[in-house]
Image (cartoon, rainbow, N blue to C red; front, side, top):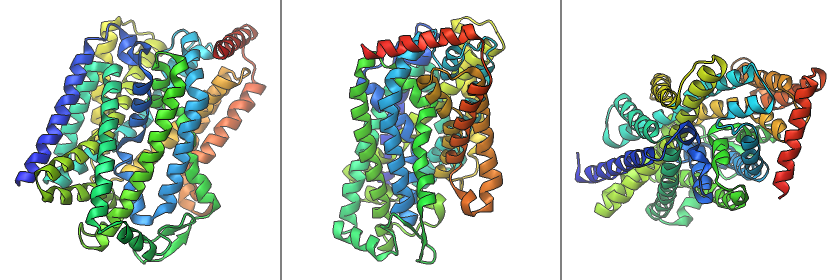
Amino acid sequence: MTSNLIIMLITIIAYMVMMVVIGIVCSKKNENVGDFYLGGRKLGPIVTAMSAEASDMSSWLLMGLPGVAYLTGCAEAGWTAIGLAIGTYVNWLIVAKRLRVYTQKCGNAITIPDFFANRYRDKKNILMGIAAIIILVFFVPYTASGFAACGKLFSTLFGIDYHIAMIVSAIIIVVYTSIGGFLAASTTDLIQSIVMTLALIILVFFGVSAAGGMGNVMDNAEGLKDYLSFTALHNPEGGESTTYGALPIASTLAWGLGYFGMPHILLRFMAIEDKNKVKVSRRIASIWVVISMGVAIFIGMIGNTLSAQGTIGKLVGSSEAETVVMKMATFMSEYGVLAAIAAGLIFAGILACTMSTSDSQLLAASSSMSENLLKGMFKVKMNDKQSMLCARLVLIVISVLSVFIAWNPDSSVFRIVSFAWAGFGATFAPVMLLALFWKRSNKWGALAGMVTGGVMVFVWKFVLAPMGGLWSIYELLPAFVLAMIVNVAVSLLVKQDKGEMDDMAAEYDAVCAELKN
């Protein structure tokens, strides 16, 4: 191993050790299950904003998005970023503050399934159980995408076996998350967002310099057919392009709908210390998201230029394209000790993207199993100590399942995240929006809508989409719309107990009154 690689490895190891230390420190602040799962609702506005967005972006920011831009240009990557930017802002604007207040009014709910069950007076906890199962089903592949990113990182950089690298990374993430809980996940997410930002900045300046200046980057992009177009996809194989019309644009923009149903993001809204500080968090989060995604797309363009110049070699297919940031960082490390340290920071940034999402997902999934399935639905009696032990065991089980799903090194991070994102967006987003903003929504509508959205995601993805044409749109859009329609229709047609409806209406009015203060 060369001296440059050793320096990069030391930088990465130092970063990973720091994450574990933070987990140990934060573990001392976990006095009960509420602290372990929601940090005692004591997050400040900056930590809330940056931990939410760091857990949102995942390895997709430094692998998936630049990879798509590298291969096909601005259309798919650009419209996806626009949809996500709009979704981020609107989610903070209309959901964050209301959810913070509502979850505390609803029996001080500490998980999303808790909130649904309490909001709809689901005494049998059927809604809670189904919501918990959905979290487990879709968080496993989502977490798998993060583990796959870690495996690709170390395999590309050090030539370490992909599977060994993936397993070791998973162990480290599980260790600090299971020790420190939500507070550790949120604190490390803040640090990881800073590392991700530094990685993006360093890479842009180095990449432009290595490419010979901004002019060369733009000349290369303009020389590729429709590479800069927002209405056509560049074809890297034949050098031609295909139309990217209104339907795929609407389909791609639909990514933004997913935000209203992402448990690991919604939990940050629930955990902020003061509801009146949400505005500050919204501004910080929105600005960071727009800039970071724009820079990530530009990095993909720079990478394409470097490939054309023969600097980093040609990357074929979506799986290889997702390593463009790694290839650029590896090339950068050859420029001396400081460059090697900076390259190590970039690789740490990729790890940060992955770890910041994986820890949040693992925590949300484990809380769903221990608090919502075992204690809520199946009435298993556990004290706080037993609940936390159960949550930690579930973390391990989910991690093992995720490792198996990510076993194929050719799996695409972008595609795995896309499917899991659609799953949460279609199942939870309609229920969440109606629970927060429609007084007449009831548990039967919520239950029907949730099941419809989940089933539709699978049907559209694996049955209808392969037919092509109109059916090839992103499964989140049709599944979200159908789930919303079913939720409203069933809520109007199937009546819930009048006493429960009156009680929910009074609670809804109390939330609205508090929000006005």
